[in-house]
Amino acid sequence: MASNATPTAVKDLIPSGEDLCKGIKDFGVAVNLKQNTFTPARAELDALIATEGNFTGAEGEEPAAYTALHSADDVGSKFISTAVKVLSITLGNSWSDVWLATGLPDNCVGLPRTQDSRYAALGGLNTYFTSHPDMEVNTPRIIVTAVLAKSCYDTITATRGGVKDATKKTADKKILRDAAMETFRQRYSGTVSELGQLLGVDDPRWYEFGLSRPGDPAQPEVPAKVHATVLGAGRVLVKTSGAIRASSFDFYRKIIGTDTDPVKMANTPGLEYTFEGLPVGAKVEVTVTGVNDAGEGHACAPVTVTVT
Figure (cartoon, one colour):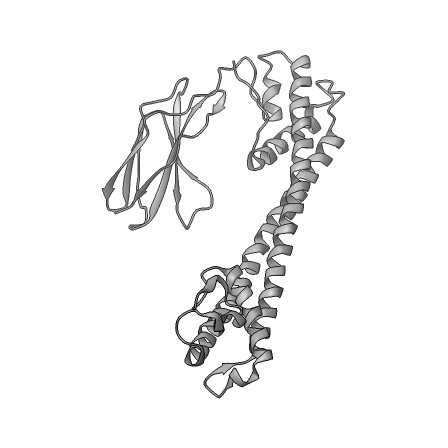
């Protein structure tokens, strides 16, 4: 028997929710839906769509914040390296007690390995050069001063704050998205449950809600023994040994670095399919799903190949 499980992933829940809401709008009165009517269902789906958009938008802001931090860290690293070379002339190339006042971490003369350590080093060097202005160098080619150390430190402080703000914003938006998702998932499962009390297992109106009829066969199992063979000239042969309850198979490809999601290339009753015209040198993930009257089953684990 087919099931109408509530989608767990937001990328599946939203389009399924659109189908469900359209069915409620067009057929809800006719089938006598009372508990799950169009207005609240549509409002909850719209809230999910809006919060998902806000969440993905916040996620999209994070790379710029990290880029700014990495850029500031690069500038600070160059200052630290130059400062160490300048100070080594007087303090020596090996760690000793005279280096303690510089604030360099880990009792090591050189560029600290971690960003946190480099940040701390800039603060220490600012304090050191402020207290030892005679150790500063300020020429057209080399600038090692307390002012520059503080500038580097302050820039990293600001960009670290930018990353913290960006990640907190994303986390906050995710909380709202997850709450909206749970609300609509309850609406979705509640509607399916109510329809189960109103429609027979073979009633074709199940399809109007984007659902399977409970009387339909269950969806196929995951295809087994999927493997890919690189044939050359941009071709890849994909084979499977089959899937329980599958009457045909959907073949997908995802070009790494080009495709955001898998792209369906073919549906065929056969157990193999040859992808053609793939870019030579590209890494490609191929997946296969089983299909029957109840719908499309879950995809197999991706198989990755390099096209020749």
